[in-house]
Length: 189
Length: 189
DNA sequence: CGGTCCATGAGACCAAGTCCCATCACTGGC
DNA sequence: GCCAGTGATGGGACTTGGTCTCATGGACCG
Figure 1 (cartoon, chains in turn orange, cyan, yellow, red):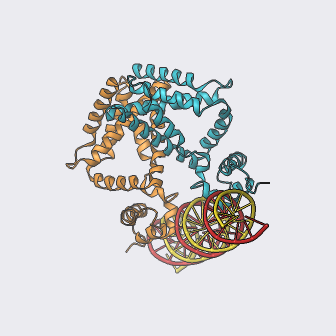
Figure 2 (spheres, rainbow over the protein chains, first blue to last red):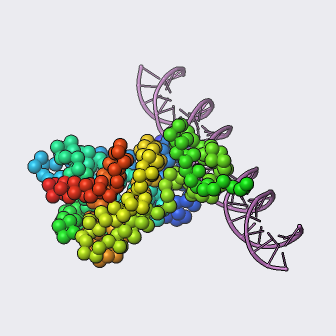
Figure 3 (cartoon, helix red, strand yellow):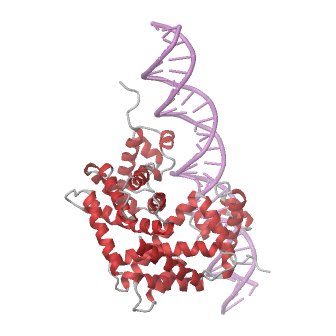
């Protein structure tokens, strides 16, 4: 008989997602989230810096992406490097078992301005960290920023597809497909 | 003798910027901002939906940019269209007399995560509205999104230059210069 | 059996944000 | 000149997010 149920952060996140779906973000209290997870407000704020953050994970994606960029083939161009990193990220993070959760989460994020705002910040930081990682590979600053902007777009397109796809398609092919589409649009635009 | 001093929102914004510079965003209370402007908390929240918003203006930039895109020469390519719109925006909004204020404001934004977060949301919405405006001109969705991403980068680069420039250079030339640089980087990346 | 560690609980406290009602100068009609 | 309506402001109660400090009690180790 254990005293504490395991994985308090995970239970809090699950409870929060449930409640946000049921009553909406602003009609859900932190205390209610904590209670549904069998915990208290104190414990909630010990695991998450604020209410919004309960639906985000602490920089793991950013870190993995930066690693992926660093360890891409040295002769790859900037945008291919980013695509490689996204592909690797998909293998370790956007696995089939996470797809349903990601879809529910994304729907909630889209529906609530406060959460969209947090997501916007994450995306900005992600783009900046991609550019920085490319720069560390020797890509000139502005080229790195261009590739990061386009890479972010590739990511958005692929992620939307991944969530929307009914048959559980893998993330990697979707990335490559999105990359090709963005390149075509770039050439034609 | 008038009862109310004019331009309450402006006075609140000025007071807020002063106080954020002096003591930092999180060490400044909404009540203190209101008092410095000779007003009260009630009035503050009547003019701004929340504390962060006091340093942002209500969608005027987004609106002007969308207009600029709609009224660009019909034969211009997507990215040129965006650059045109940025140029027009510079003439009506980023005027020389606003440069010092913009610089102070930007320094404060950069220094405080909560404000950076709001800025990130504004930027995301701006990019989305650019893409939408381009789409209304007949640009295919993905081409529009690519141009919006690159246009946002052009804007960032030009805006940094504009703020950093000591001799009060006009916004328009900085936009064209940034556009050329981004295009060169795109070709070389 | 006893001490230490660590995740949690409890509750006071402050500031952001909402809401409702009072106030008071200005305006226009009579 | 008086009176009613309008609109920006003030005041204060109230909820909730977020911080902080201290207490609790099981687990692990000797």
